[in-house]
Figure 1 (cartoon, rainbow, N blue to C red):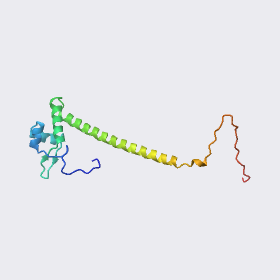
Figure 2 (cartoon, rainbow, N blue to C red):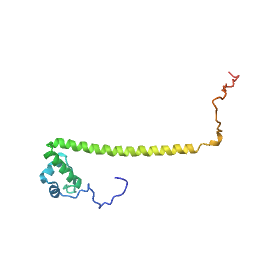
Figure 3 (cartoon, rainbow, N blue to C red):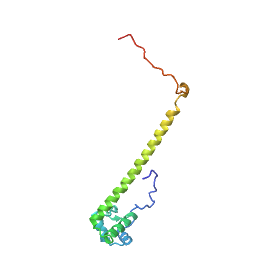
Figure 4 (tube, rainbow, N blue to C red):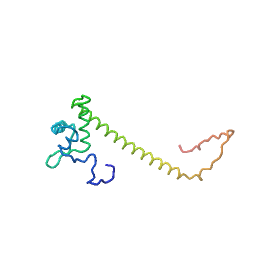
Length: 149
């Protein structure tokens, strides 16, 4: 979630609203095919308290994608399952990268603000500035020797 509270009655692409017969019509597949895809783990709809399947709009789109990969591309169901797993993994990794990038940007901004605060706290009146010329004399500093040894 993105930090905002959602209306519990607001429908999203993930809201499970379609029974298996409607999902079958919307996806152009037979209900038994949807049950088979569920058993294989290709599309996992939500379940009601009575264990009935409820499909979301995203599930319907995934069913269409599975059908297209199977029929048009000739990919077997095991291959399709692996493709779906990899696509989900890529999406999760992209979300994690975005999250970490945001954290890095926030840390960089905080560091720049702290650095600016440190620079603003300097007391410039304590260090007199003299323009040093190239022809200046060299002064050698020798520490005082202590007689205690």
